[in-house]
Length: 127
Image (cartoon, rainbow, N blue to C red):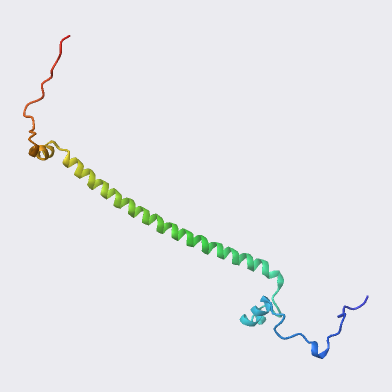
């Protein structure tokens, strides 16, 4: 069996430039200096589990953010309901007060209408 070799030999002037083959793995190695931990290079078999854990972390952060926003909206809606309930109670009390017979008599007194002092008389028609 023959040995694997390049088809064309690289000449001295055609050497690849130092940053042309820059990948995310080389960037990680350069920035984090993980060579003492992982050895030479990033093991490719670790990429899917690490990516999955990162995805789960993002989903957790997103769901926590949505839950906090929902709690804020619920608290705001509850405060609005309490304010409306207080307004309704106040309006009902004012209505009940203004519909009392004595209050109605005071309001219509300037029109010449007086409160009855005796019960109404029932008129019956005989056939």
